[in-house]
Amino acid sequence: MKKFTSSIFLIASFLMSQSQSCFDFASVPPVAYGDNVLYPAGSVILSSNDIDIIKPSETFGIFPMEGFDILSVDSTGIYFVNQLDIDVSNVPYSCKELSFELFYNGIAVDGDTVSFGHFALPPLPYVGAGFTVDTVAANSYIITGTFDVIHVFGSTSILSNLCVNECATGGCFQFPNSTTGPYSDNTLYPAGSVILSSNDIDIIKPSESFGIFPMEGFDVVSVDSTGIYFVNQLDIDVSNVPYSCKELSFELFYNGIAVDGDTVSFGYFALPPLPYAGAGFTVDTVAANSYIITGTFDVIHVFGSTSILSNLCVSPCNTTEISEERLTNNAKVYPNPSSGLLMISDIPDQARVMIYDVSGVLLYDRSSNAGKLQVDLTNQKSGTYIIRVSSKSKIYHTKWIKY
Image 1: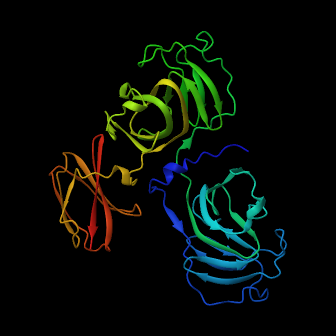
Image 2 (image 1 turned 180 degrees about the vertical axis):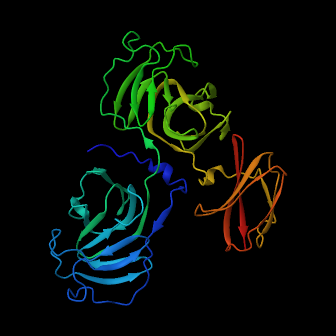
Image 3 (image 1 turned 90 degrees about the horizontal axis):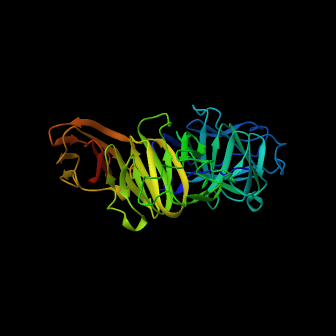
């Protein structure tokens, strides 16, 4: 098995742009699904958003289908005895990300048995033929890849929070389980040598003259599936990534960084106030030692002393991303709250104004050179909305509430 790097700590902080479809478990009256005449194997029990929940064949799994029944279905999920199939073959994209909560059962993906029950899970992540199974919390699973059917088997169980979306564009750096080296040898590995490469990202031994520490003493202490442990400096080159506007996220301990030659900080204890806006890029944090760089850039230079680089991922810029940690009040909105007629002022020249609901759906998008805009959102329901004002390399957010 190889490590599946999903960068969950970032995902939890953002509302992602990929269109997500969740199963609508509607309350239904009790039905005799245990009757194999009325509901033979293969019957679709429930269907929603291109996902079918099916009564599977009697021969699959460690428990025979005898005794199968649906105890209840309501808006939260389905409470059943024995087995189920979750069929996503009709979902309109090949690479899928399926998430769900499941209590006290085992699962198989396209016939590959991942586990026989809640208490017999293999070490996760589990990597199968074209798919990966991982957990994001107790009893919460996420399956990513090119698959069609999830078979659920066990005893009495609950299936809930069933959602599917397209695989995120981009990729995470796959750190190998070992390193070759010795990278400290400047003859074998001169400045500019690519040390590791994965998913269009190159980790490079940089020139000796850059940064506040010279390259003398550079070495890679270790590399394993979690990251790279090194002394001195590194370059992270994303110039080969096939899109111009990038979002690079990573964890970095006790070091400084520069973006395309613009020194953002000289070390962990000397960070400027974040977010930091440079020429065409923005640097921000999502947690302690966790960074996100967004914009049109090519090389991140890392300098300092002994350090660890991990959870390195890149994806296209996400115009619908909303970070509560980056909400500011540079753009003024009034009245706030209001019934839906609002004025946005203090808008920079050549700015783009976008309004999203809290689920990340774009409701309004307009360019402005007037400094202010009047917007009519009276047809929207009550709640909190995010207003994003984007001008060159700077991005401002503010909240507006409709009563």
